[in-house]
Length: 58
Image (cartoon, rainbow, N blue to C red):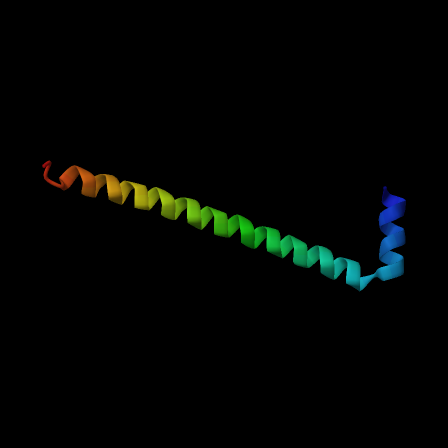
């Protein structure tokens, strides 16, 4: 495994590092986005529950 990584880095150098870096950044952005969406979903659920409780029953 280490031999393969060293061979790829020696042949393609900075390009390989750049691709892995960009993939890593994309993964981190995706995690953050999913976290924000999950948090927003929880807040919207709470708000809708509070509104539903306060509306008069017909």
